[in-house]
Length: 322
Image (cartoon, rainbow, N blue to C red; front, side, top):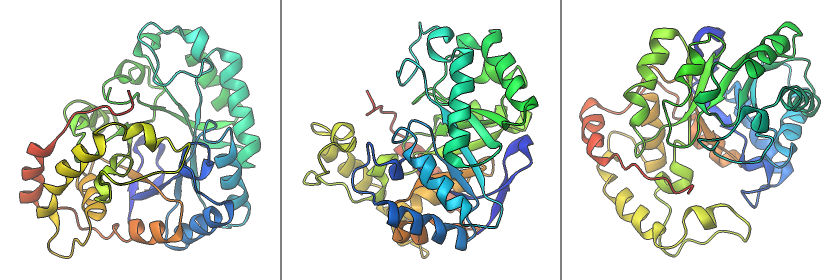
């Protein structure tokens, strides 16, 4: 496993991070706690030291699994979690008021709950799970962030940027209180490279690349006949004719399979890691098999320059979360 600096936090984080949404069991159906724990342990054995979870993942279930794992390990594991919006609206609406989404008492209570779930004294990286940059200058969140840091309950703060809004957070960053951004970045969604990445590089802000496989699209395993368990959010994400559209788009990427790049999932992860400004790529991992495949990509080999140039024409702005 190779490591990169998470901006001004100074953390040296593994290039591949553990995306823990799936082990929360509320929207990704099929995870078993025993296998989730095995996956977390296997990841740590392979050198992974960064886990991203959230209070909203299974109403704290993901955090509790991570907390149990942390008590079983002796090495330093860096954990990021997130404060859910009080009004339960993802993403934040343009007209949303911060007092309805992140009132002071909610920020504090959510952080306290996460500390209990994770069984830690201090959260390494606390994040707002949605954002509206109209809130940037408002004192509610700014003073509360400072208070939680002073009290030793959160070392650093970041923003998980709304879906397909990579510049929604730059005003907040101007306050100096934001140490990292988590953003959708993958072969289809390349927009963060234009403004967000240069800004973060200039201001030493960490970049956590999420959805590197576009919720499974870029694995190459989605076909019109693919089915998901009842209650799994992917039934909605890939609703209608989307599976066929995804398959056709992904088939055009098979030119990436050369020079020991064996799968499209591997190629997708290597794409994200090819940009040195990315601190870590959080891939969803619910089994030891996923862990071993994903961690193997951290070997210092990005995609060839020629392939990266060709991929520019395969950018596909789409928002299946709508």
